[in-house]
Image 1 (cartoon, rainbow, N blue to C red):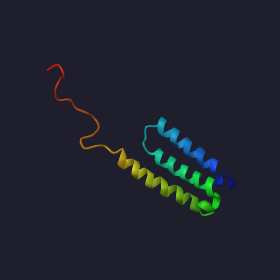
Image 2: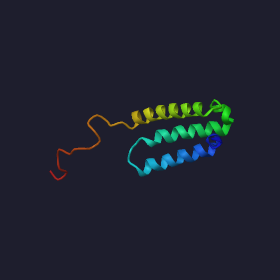
Image 3: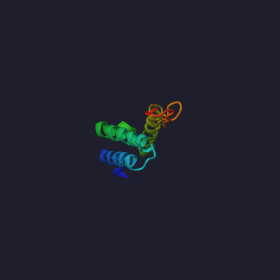
Image 4: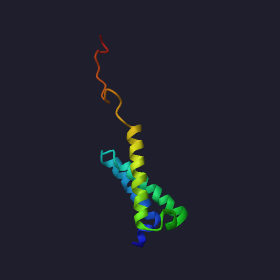
Length: 94
């Protein structure tokens, strides 16, 4: 499981999730991609000690950051009152 502590593995995983967000219209993978990106940055800057030194703590950081990022993204890109579809009541030619 030594590869789990390589920053480039987490960066690749985050990039894969970001690409999956573009391809699949689910609006959920971007939060996970941001979580993997944060773990990759922590590993690149401080090594395994920056994420607690164990795989468990690394997964806790990944899950926590992913949840917070997903909640923020959900708030920012939420549906406005009345939905997203514009319903026209009049015709431009009237």
